[in-house]
Length: 383
Ligand code: CAA
Image (cartoon, rainbow, N blue to C red; front, side, top):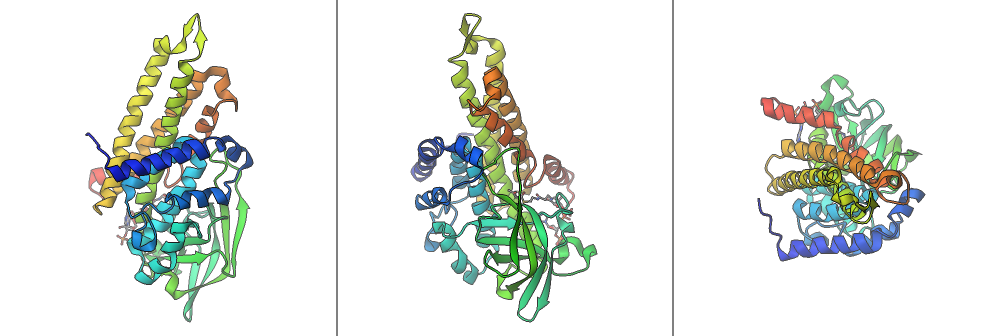
């Protein structure tokens, strides 16, 4: 399959690449050490359109689609996976469901501000007792007049402590046996009374991204803040994750490409036994496997993104892209450390960060095991 980018797509990819190489690369290790991303950095990205790729021009965005989003996200993740996931969540998990399920008033209310970076987006589904089994979530939303009153807590919420807008999934029907059928999606703004940011997680990788607990204590949310329909929130959650999984697959792709690039560079500099290590077949075969896996993953990612843009079912394709890309990224990052030998295990070289960052791609937005559930259901023709 030959993919020829249009002039506009090429320009967007170049913009993301230049930003990643010139602005992110010099500070990526520092962000990882200091465990946060300055808001000014995200604002700079917004100013050049990187936070609004999928937002239509009439709302102040770039007006492109998911395919273009992955072109840009690969470049960002190639340099800094923490920044990559921050942008991915903003775009795929917060902006995308507004575009696909929001009404005109909600689009008008939020999209222009998401485009400029004035507000950052997050998505809150996971709870302590509802990880892979998302439909068993326990946060409640009780109707009270024209409001809903939210109680409960969410965990592992990417961007949760820095976002101004969070899409929160809560149980509007207290009967837990209804599972997915009793869940509603709400817009919660960070300033709402009863909304609190809880514990911040210390993580193995993607250390600069913000991962927190969110707590809702009688948090009052107006009924206009329901995204889509009451009790139809699980559909919003799952459709959104179809897009989010493409974003995480792209993150894996970026990390793997970075691992390969660093390995090629090192193998062409490092001499042992009187010659460059790139002249040893042991190293050449590792590089060949990495390059082949990366190309295969990129095709799966592109296919899933194009299908999402065409609005055809792509649940299986998104799951396949994430499963394959995250598996191969972990392999590539591990090989990159191996090719670097001792120095690869130190912070002198970025491959130890790639190795740590890669792991999460097999876990969040559905573990590899969840992706296999999704894919096997499609293969078997079961829902
Ligand atoms: N699109 C639209 N609707 C969908 C859908 C999709 N892709 N998948 C399922 N649904 C609908 C179903 O049609 C069904 O609706 P009806 O009852 O009306 O028929 C409903 O949702 C329930 O579906 P299932 O019966 O398939 O639900 P399940 O309980 O068997 O769960 C699951 C399936 C795939 C395991 C799901 O729970 C899942 O994906 N779990 C993983 C959760 C996850 O990925 N969490 C990530 C958190 S976010 C995150 O990680 C962000 C971050 O930090 C970066």
